[in-house]
Image (cartoon, rainbow, N blue to C red; front, side, top):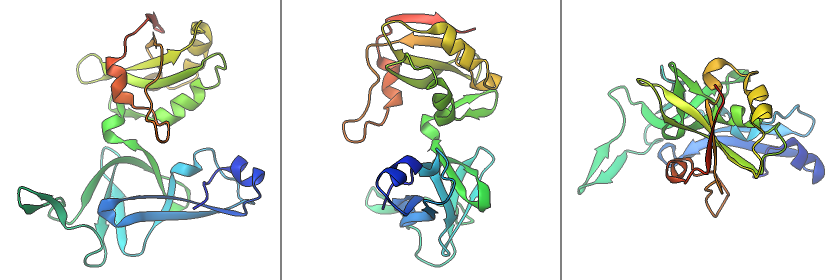
Length: 221
């Protein structure tokens, strides 16, 4: 399927593109949305799943985790095979917890945010990592960067910005940060030599940031 990105579509003359959301447990793509080049395609269109298939029902739990349930028999997987038998993975009402965080978007569609295991939570709120990184990206002097966390006070995470830059523009980062809601603001900057990414798609491997040697810590408080 063609990537749902407005610039990509215009550059290569692609009239229609598709975005979706799904998982192996849900039989592949459970949500799908078709975009036209005439549409106002948002920057986060690749995360927009849209409406679900007719044979799948979905909702968000109190923490914003995406749950799916089959409307027709044998739509979802039965369970995980372990220790010589199938381990059920649904609750008594048939809901499967995907481990992904989402939001309800326009047109009653699903917007995928991130894996719950790769999320940051401050004062009961999940920090929208892609949104915060998009705002930090306005600071052009950064070679590379990634938002991640460290254990903070009590049950809260502390938001940390890992940056690759010979000269870290602390004042500019602080100015952008101040435009964000308080719970989204990084409290510290960690200067590192590289941001760990996978070799296939270049996706940030956030949990490996915990083991990175920090060249310099800078406070944003």
